[in-house]
Amino acid sequence: MKQTALRRAATVTAVMAVFVLGLAGPAAAHVTVNPGTATQGGYAKVSFRVPNESDTASTTELEVNLPVESPVGSVSIKPVPGWTAVTEKSKLATPIKVHDSELTEAITKVTWTAASGSEIKPGTFQEFDVSLGPLPETDQMVFKALQTYSDGTIVRWIDEPTTDGTEPESPAPVLKLTAASAAPSAAAAAPAPEAAPAEEDGNGGTVLGIAGLVAGLAGLVVGLLAYRKAAQSTTPAA
Image 1 (cartoon, one colour):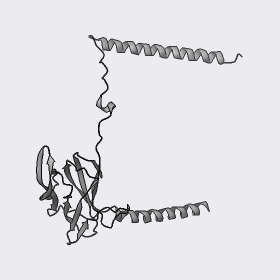
Image 2 (cartoon, rainbow, N blue to C red):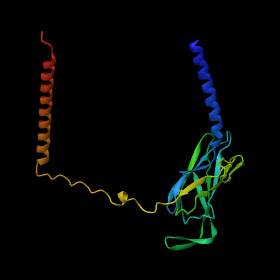
Image 3 (tube, rainbow, N blue to C red):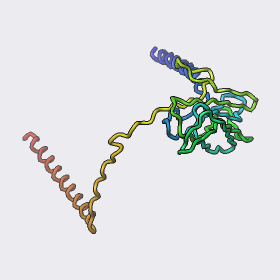
């Protein structure tokens, strides 16, 4: 009886696990940017993670669009073996300043294309690293992405975040930006003083080490004698 109940419980648990994973799988398969947060005004290395959703086709190209309304002055791309990266620039409606220089154009698109044999195969994923900065003083950066498959299918990850918190059908990668701290804390600004190193004279360190060892052995002997004396005092007389 008990074994039958256990078997039923195990079956129900397995079914629920498959159901939950089945719901979570598709939602986690879109193109994302990692990490998902960074600091305004700073530089960050982000990775565009691209999983392959098709069972039969491979991903051959990724196009990532940087937001024109919140541009960054510096975009550096880490090479990916077997992939070629091409950048495109756009004129800025409002110039931005980077290191005391005024920029009137910025990189607004990066396209990675796979060489033959380097495609993202079914059941695998690839990451494309980009260094960005200085990051704009805005709440978020939305990177609309297009994923092209070997069978000609193009998946457009371009839906912007919703206001009600629900995830859109084809969400675009989003980098959340937080304001930099106004000033470092007193503890961080003033490092703790370092302890003065112990002075050694000749073999002083060795002598002190031997003295410490002798003192420790003496303490151990005294403790054992005290324990033995206490044990004898508590033993009832015959």
